[in-house]
Amino acid sequence: QQHIEQMALAIEDGVDVIGYCPWSAIDLVSTHEGIAKRYGFIYVNRTDEQLLDLARYKKDSFYWYQNVIDKNGLGE
Image (tube, rainbow, N blue to C red):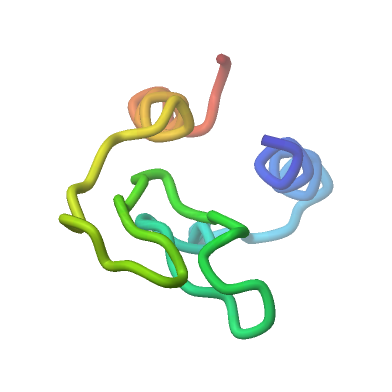
């Protein structure tokens, strides 16, 4: 959220922002923290030791970002 807020300020200052790419849509494995640090909007059911069923579940942040997209970055 803070990154998007800063982009809005940059646009107000005249910066030509053409897009925004979040780090990752689904959880990914960090090179130094394994799966313990989960970055994505979609949870992947696995651990560092076990793949489990690899089911995907939308996190609260998924719905937050979906709203950001629907509002073109404006509002909550």
